[in-house]
Image 1 (cartoon, rainbow, N blue to C red):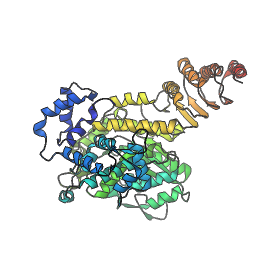
Image 2: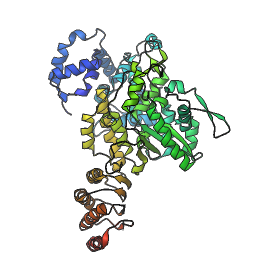
Image 3: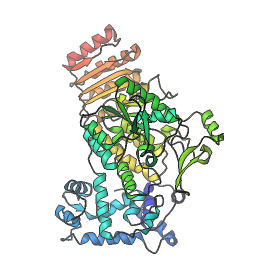
Length: 567
């Protein structure tokens, strides 16, 4: 549609054509091309001509031609597409269920038909991440090659096509963002294992840092609260299923955090301490088990050798938003980095060792912080961190997202937030830092899908702790909530500008019930005036609850007059 290749896909395109550039080389190529957003076909042709010496003899482009020839065998009428029956014939004997066949048709359907468009399937290869594209084309991805894989022969064309279609179906899988059973199903199908908060307490007590999922799987600890009972560090899938069925009480918390070093996300145990402190409050308040999603411990980490580990990671990344946007989870964000004095002390210390994966030794080795590749980029400049926060803010109750450490970034003493509009999100992603350029476009596409899936069907919204800037953001986001019936605002700050903007958005909304509870009389005064003005236009609001607001007699009179018009 944009008549060219997105610049973020240049490396992927070069890999498909048999080249193997590094990220730095791709960056240099883009600078040479003038840093365009899209590389048109003519520019790309001349660029590739200039790179010809790098093209290998056994070109993966030939594999794409083989794939096209293979698909044409099943296109009996030569129409460039496959019917549901032809698709099922091609996939006979594979793991593609009826549900997955339908998912493939949804993703790759030809306009006006329920047929799979062969051209779209070929294009899909171009839209895959680097690792996935290489795997489909029979190449070993540069960052996940295991000794056992070197002995595996290249796949035949049929296997490649079947794998591509299975991956498409998995990517298009529909998991409910409300149903606990859907969350349990996702965790089981991806083999993500949650970690017990009480195990994290045990780590703090013994002054041990996190270990990778691969090592944590075998960990057990002693629960001092149940007569010294030994328990596994990770929660079993059976336990999660029991929770989803209502047979067990637990709170599931997803952690949004930085990776402070490439080899380990939390070498200083700064994040671990904050997690234990906050999870302990919830455990004490509700007297239930706290289960935590923390990627390093719950998801198979580099270096992944077995097919199962690689498949688990790939499937999880396709639907990672589920852990942050699901209505049955909470999100805790840790947005501060370890204090400079702590970081500097550990940089000088040779005796404080952290177990990390050593690529050369192919084993876990204890190393000091100074031997790691450190990353002190702030939380709010990291693409994945921004995305996880935005997914979390799409829940119906904003309090399900919490920044759990005390930082210096609160405005008016309030930390509540409102989801960014699609345009604002794209702008934030353009400025954000990603380890892999291709992640940026993937996150934007995923956010677009999730935003509309959640926001456009949301009927009830509860927002708490909004500073003035977020009240203004709410006025921008409110028009997207096209099905919103009730809204509750608790503890906020706003001036006349923010209140007026909110009133204008409310005037054209479909909200029927509005609750406003605030402890700041100045903010309430401005908002009541704006609401009264909105009611002169809005005809949907039927019930307003303004108790515990110092709205003054004048404000109450303005609302009463507005309701005469509204009614």
